Length: 244
Image (cartoon, rainbow, N blue to C red; front, side):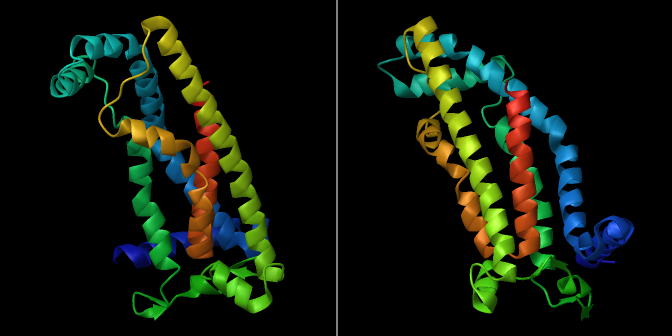
């Protein structure tokens, strides 16, 4: 059995298992549960990423010292920065791993609920709904079928509201964390934090990235949107706990 039929069978079996509790929305609940299981699997990496972030913050005084020492030679500074991370066993990209490892699960759901057939047979999962919205449908379909406040459109209104609340929480928390880190480093080392080339630009954009989830929810099949909303909400809570 290839991966997509096997995955479809897994979702169907999970939906059948919880059907007595969730009724017609069992398939949608199964996707939420599947997302939670994926997040539990990558949670150890998230904890490691949190430890790495705290370690990188602790390195800021040393990084400021390196910047002063190599202020006339940016290439030497970048090499010294990489050497420092290696010496302290701190990876500057460890925070990306949890997100990257979730991509296969997201694309499985995207492909599964974008395909009319699975393994040469009709894709029965497309018949499942979250209230009035088909799991294989998109926001454009809801708009065409009954408008933004039609039966299916209201499902997306609810999802957009959840994403907006989570994105705002993440935005405010990220801005506060970055401001605190900058103030702490300035007070202890007399300089702003230094990062590997390109990281400063990413840092400026990072607080706004959570709002791009709204675009994702609007354009992907509803099943994949449920994965994104559940995972994003999990991330917001997880980071608030791990980075407190």
